[in-house]
Length: 219
Ligand code: BG6
Ligand code: MG
Image (cartoon, rainbow, N blue to C red):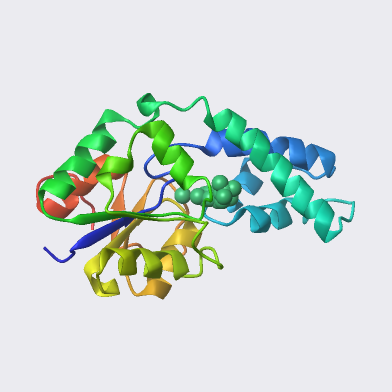
């Protein structure tokens, strides 16, 4: 086995929070008179809250001071957290839990590496904290993906060197962050990858077969 640890992105990999982010940002975009659609939303994947706001404001005809931007981001987060309260353990598919258990049973250490400051709250809502040896999230980093900080810190928390870790990502910014951290990446979902990830998988449920043998991997 090439790896000793696996670092999972959270949003879009272990669960789907896209619709909540989308809904919460939609109101911000309306206030800023900025266009907001799925293409803009895709660009927000993996990047921090404030950077996401800057992307949304790119097309706004209005100008905002820094304190106004902070208020917009805070209000978005309040809406987002209200929506997250609807999440339950049922929002983490049984197949994902099975995959995490199989990887742990194979002796791998597992971590979460997420830009989100809400990662702890989401893991709690999903009742998924027990699968991870470490959680490195937006509260522990100063630079968000594509900067490698979140993955470098997660590997440190696992006590592993970069080359022993595999990152699992759904976003181009995350793939770039993994490369910058010196880690292989398994890309899940249908993102337009800027370069080929080491593994390309439909979702996390295909990971045990890809790493531990069996069918389902496209290398
Ligand atoms: C990432 C999401 O996981 O977290 C981004 O992919 C989001 O879309 C980022 O902007 C920050 O999240 P939060 O919860 O701290 O606002
Ligand atoms: Mg993601």
